[in-house]
Length: 200
Image 1: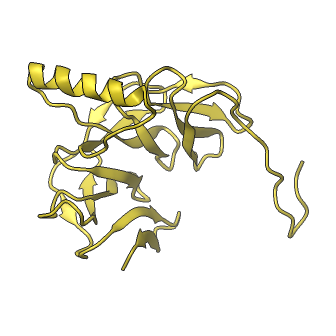
Image 2 (image 1 turned 120 degrees about the horizontal axis):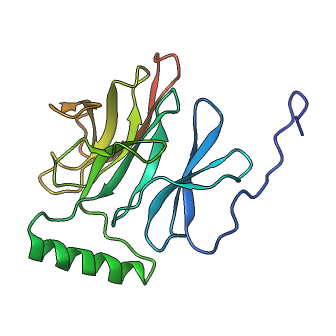
């Protein structure tokens, strides 16, 4: 069904699996939808076609993989994921804590890093290593940089600002300097505008 001018598209349920299906975003190409789901038993990124069919699990590592956005060509995804300690004993404890919270439908997102991955699930790559709550990543219009929100520069951990980094990682550029909450950045497709949420 194609609505007439001025009409809205009718609502239609795309998923019906019990649990958490959320954080859905549409590829700029228009062929796929990325969403976060617990249907595998962990919190992973999945994609489907525009009608909710052809389900594909993109990520499969332990931790909260979510909040994904497509690159403008639809080939890659940028997302946030749980940052577990590298020390073996500390990592085991953190994973056990994560799994215990998951049984209660809860998470503790205090340490999240930004990653990219190909839409087919290959080439998973860590972009940031800040040891903070970094999330809400979005590709620049040329897909060569990523803007995201983080509290890593906050002395209290309560203030979130926008930062940017190359899509291969590297030096972090600070975009906003506000004692409060700046997050969820998105560019217009022509790159002329940036919109974000703030409690200022």
